[in-house]
Length: 218
Length: 218
Image (cartoon, rainbow over all chains, first blue to last red; front, top):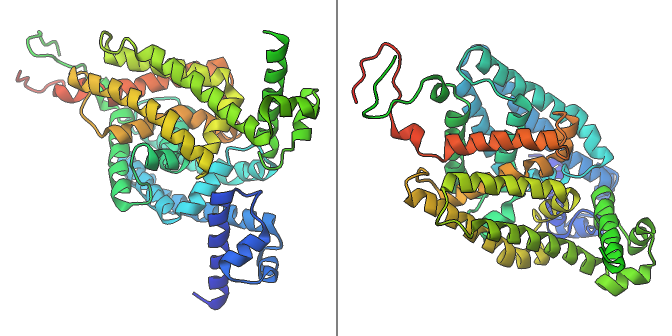
């Protein structure tokens, strides 16, 4: 990494840490420059002001996130939809873990009704929804997924994937589950696979259950 | 409602609305008193300051929320665990819809690592977890629920129940699902029942599926 990028990264890391601990509004540019060990002028140079820094955190996270989904779904027509969905979920969880502070910040900020959000919603999240929906529709067409309300499914999937971030404090202090740990991520991923197998794959509802002792009519 | 309570409610409603739109830090006591149509002194009288008001919002919401769970689980030993879990989920979703702004605010604030949170986590959420765990353990003991990682299940359930609040903007502007509407709540609830049936109830794994044309061995 070049010197320039190192400085930029240090500023972003310091900002995310402070936004997390003190909140965005209570964090000053001076706090960030102190923690990052740079001059305030350097922050102005790279990001203009605190709002510019905030926007940069959002957009760089979301661009990388979307790129990941795009790359993954390029093969959508040729792959098994269930395997494709599972490996996408895995990549998203790993990406969130790798960018833990940024992910936590982006997810917690998007619950607010701000103009920045509206802008982001209309671009990044609309694209994300488009990809998820295309994947789900392919699965339904191929007869692998059951038919279901896709908006509600997408909302549920996002709720499940973001729970370790949005309920991070709860998770650590009440449940003793540590979302930053690899062990947790793997265990959580397993349960998401289970969720996909049980909820989305069509089989369990397609065939009636046969109980021991009952007459079987096929 | 008495005059006193009406004033208090008006202040809380104004505060929650402004916290939502402007954020907690950017909202002043004067903003709240203007919107509520009361004197700033009235706010001081009831809540001391903005922080007191914040604490009141949190604790009154969480006390009512916990009371709901407690009342519901009194019958835990005598009821069918699956039906009990479903009706609890229903009551929580209805409660969240009725107290939409407060719920949204409480959920989005608890993702931060603050001292208020740590206090709340150690009392309210620990109790909530205790009840949910008791319900799940009863279900597993009775052989109705499959055995699973309870902390992860609880995290998933909370992720699913809070998704319409924490992803409210996304839900409305990208998915065109409106979490404040009764129609949405009912549709979402149906999908949560489906989640419970498919994920937690033991049956689907207990009995092998029988496919048409296969020899059946019972």
